[in-house]
Image (tube, rainbow, N blue to C red; front, side, top):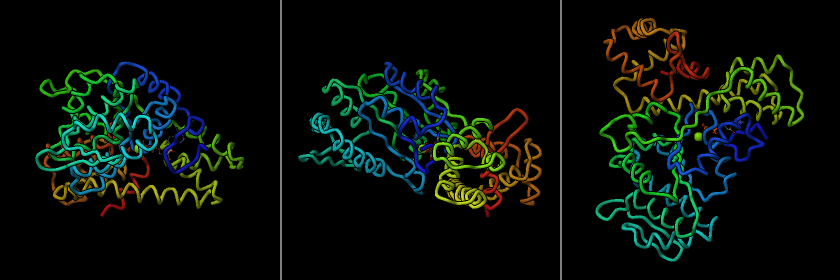
Length: 372
Ligand code: ADP
Ligand code: MG
């Protein structure tokens, strides 16, 4: 079904992403070690990853790092927790490979293997290092004559884990592994790039070529087509006028469009489904904005004022600044103001267009107006 509230796992349910899927397939078959899947929130990254991995039929482990975003202070132990959960479920899905993995892990410091149980030591001396863990997987895949994938979904969240040199880990994997490929997805594209420092000559990943796949939001035409096809599929009659209204309200955000359709399929009227989809979206976005602001308590009022300015239609640097300052009843030093704008850009709550700045998703407008 095209309409659902969760990431897709089959091509038939996944609308119009053929080129991106082909690109991911080519990457998985290639010798390239590292792939980035980039796109704003709810553009379909996790879906692309799942469909692509499933079709390739390669052994894979996906870590959903959004759980780290919800924590005030995510730790290395949280990452290992996630890893051990995914490894166990992987081992039970792929019994054949499980043996090779247990074997490869026996010699890794910080990993204890007891029968089928794997446990990690995560603190102090002798803690397991991520790079050794991945190297263990690489050995296991090589020993089994196969190539496997480890995917870090929303990889920028690892930037908040203290002591983790993720860029060094990736550089090591890039240079040394031939049987383990890495896929990273990121909603906060600017943050991911700053974190991985591909452009910094002093950084471990400098100059490495990466396979990039970008997932833009749908255009107006694509959005209408998506809704039409979805309703055809479930043989539900809807009027053109309703569809146009939906696309006006939700724009081309696949996640919101899909959720609206899902609610209609459940029997909600057009009005009820649209208002429910908006309400749920705004609630999710408020949570995401709060996670962002919680880490920046001193600048909170300024961010809120900037988002308010954008939500009320300001587009140009000077205009946004003026509206935000009026709302705050204080001046924001120009340098600081630019920093705040750049930070919003980095995390994808804001996008740059030729004639200025704008909110990428109409529901961010709503959420911004509600921000206290
Ligand atoms: P992301 O990982 O980028 O945040 P997801 O893959 O979780 O996005 O997709 C968000 C929602 O939108 C999911 O419910 C998914 O089923 C739906 N969706 C995204 N892209 C498509 C698409 N091309 N066709 C159908 N549904 C989609
Ligand atoms: Mg996702």
